[in-house]
Length: 313
Image (cartoon, rainbow, N blue to C red):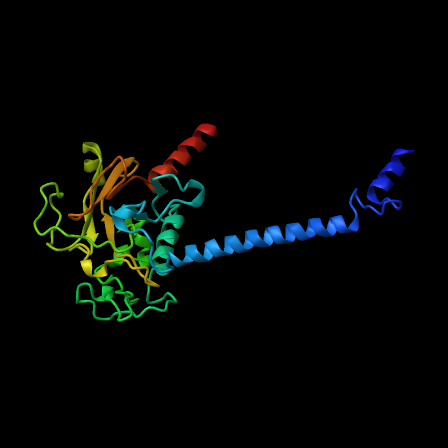
């Protein structure tokens, strides 16, 4: 018997009425078994998924603060971020001047401010106009859930030089950078009542507020960094906390204006958050963030190009 005939008999044997070595009854039993088997698996999976969903909520995490993986010590976030292809880099580098290459930094910062603005964003939260009452938005409803009301961040103290209209002063080589605390559900700062001994000198201290300050990591960096101004100057009020996953919630922030950084110099910067319940740990990036700042002067960049062209000629 040829190989082709063997294959035909394997597919269908007219003498034994078998297909692939099984009769019709055998195939029906096999198919029925797997239908029941996978139906039971799907039912068990659905039951466990349903039970799992009963233990979690879309509004709040099951494990919070010290019981969660991220803990109760927030990190400090910096905006604007690097481009996606350099997302792991902590270097803010650009050329100043009218022909500078600062477009990404300006656009990224403007985009963040626009997306985080609860007034312009499409959200279902009640926006509190009177936020003078501390903790007003964390009051609990009668059904036991927290209110979705949010307190929009008061940015009236942000000066014109730190706005999009002035490109956040990037063209001048005096950039404004945004710093905020990373969100932790239910966390609320415990501000200092008295000025901490390690609090940077020369910075206004207001009891009862949260602060974020920046300085050079080393002595040379502190000298090259130059004077800084903070907006709001009195720190962040605690009325904006806690974060309870309210739709449209805006993280309060501090806009830091680097007024006279030394150009053409790599500056290592460290920014810290200040509150009683914030631990500052450089090795684990707790309560602080570090980055590098390098601003190239436009004149020197153009003169370098002229020098290279003269050499080539």
